[in-house]
Image 1 (cartoon, helix red, strand yellow):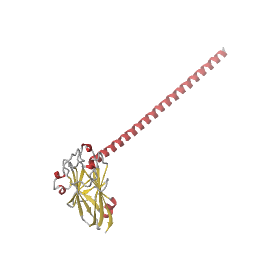
Image 2 (tube, rainbow, N blue to C red):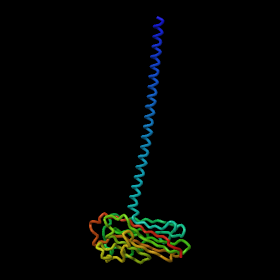
Image 3 (cartoon, rainbow, N blue to C red):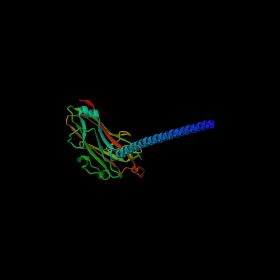
Image 4 (cartoon, rainbow, N blue to C red):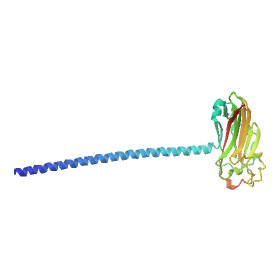
Length: 256
């Protein structure tokens, strides 16, 4: 009887020990499972945050591109070094109270073709942006706010041209009231268009300008007018929806 009781007690102890081990294993499993769930939640949260950041970056890039297309298709710039060290600055008016290195002009959406004769004669008498229904017009001033007489070069560049819209585009540049109309060489290679005063200098450069004696407090006034010339034989349906970007850049070439 004593032996049976001892065996029974041993069996009970073993069963209790087994139950304890099983419970401990269950607790460890639960803890491990809870830890895995927590880690999974953390990973999901990190991935969600990264996705939000990525979406925001794409949205910002799209917005920058959109506003660049909408408001930055004609940009005027001076070399920032020349602005800081020599006082070369830009302004939309003859008066200015701070130095500016970059100006941006609005564009005209869905611009259709017109004749250059439809553009007002006083188009260069208005400062800043003064677009018409079917042309872009922008007047600005290049100013020597420094103390030295300098020489500068300037050039107008075009890029991102689509649908060969440059074949029919006209760009008039007024420098201190003197007008020059620029256009691309005739598509048949026979020379300058009849309504132009000069051809584009190259496939990427519209024109260039300079001033060898730009004195302190001097101001050079520029007006740029852009339109599609309806009388150009290349002004056809194929250029509909065409776009191009223009920029004008100035830099000092020497002190005099």
